Length: 405
Image (cartoon, rainbow, N blue to C red; front, side, top):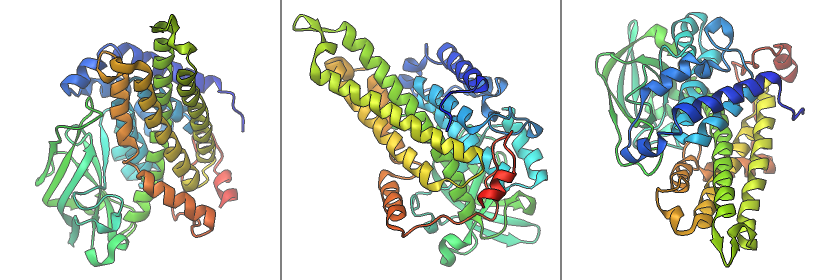
C-alpha cells in the first residue's frame, strides 16, 4: 500500500475541510443545542460535488476513489457527526447501492440527481422489531399485476423527513425470513407513504432521524432493485459501504477529541504547570493519538480493497468496530481531560461523546462485529462472491474485479 495521499485526495480533503469549517463549525453548537436540521447544508454539499464523490462522471458524480470518500467523511465528522451521517446514508447506503445493483435506467433516473445533490436519498432497513436481525423484518410487499403493495413501518431512519428517495426493504413472505427480502426505491409523495421525525435523541441532534410508514403504497415493478428475494444480499452489500463511511468518519471524531484535548491541556494550569505535563493526562492523549493512527490505517486498507473491487466485508467490519470504539473512548477521555468543563456544552467534547455513542450501535453493533471477527478467525465464516460484484473505484480497471473473483 502507498500511504502517501495523491494530489486529488489532498484536493478533496482540503475542499471538504474548508467547507465544513466555514459553513458548519461556527453554528454547530447552537444547531445541536436547539436540535435544528439545516437542509441547505446538504444542498451546498451537492453543489460542491461532495454528495457524488465516488460516483462515476457518467452518472453525474465526481469520479474520485474510496480513499477520497474516506477523507471526506473524516473531515465532515471532525466538525459534526450529522454531516457524516448524511454522507453515509445518501452515498454509502443508497447511491453506491444503485451503482452496484441498479439497471442503467434506474441509475439515470435516481443515481444521477443524487450524485449532483438535486435529490437527497436515504436507506430504510431497520424496523421497530427488527434491527440486527434483518430476517425479522415485518414490512411486506405483495405483487399485484404491474406493481407491489407495500405495508409496514421503518424506524431510526436518517434523513427520514428530508430525503426524496428511499431504498426500502420488505419481505414477500415472512416465513422465508431473509430469503424473502426484496429492495425497492420509494419516492416522497407516493400515496400512503408518510414520514415523521423522532425527537429526544442523545446525540446527532443537528441531524434528522425519523420513521416511515407504508399503507398500501403502490410501487411500480420498475422500482424494484435487483431480483425478488435478493434484498438481503443487497442490504448486506449496502451495509459494507455504510460501515466504511462510519468508520472513516470515526477517525475524524477521534482527531477532533485529540485536538481539543491537546489545546486544553496546553493552556489549563494545575499545580503550577499546564496539565499536559501530568503523566496520566499524557496517557489519555497518547491513547487518542495511537487510536487515530490505527483507525486511519484500517480505513485506508479497506479503501484500497474497495478501489480494486474486492469484497471487503471482514476488513470493513474490523475498521468500523475498531474506529468507533476508539472514538467513543477518545470522547470519554477528552471529557476527563477537560474536567468539569467537559461536562458542559461550553466545550465541544460533551457533544463528541453523545455523537460517538450512537456509532457503536448503528451499522452493526459492537457485539455483531465481535462475532463476525471471531467467526472469520475461527474459520466459521467465509465471504463468497456476490452475484453483482462491487464496482471498482472510478479509474481502476474492471480486470481487477475479475482477477480477484
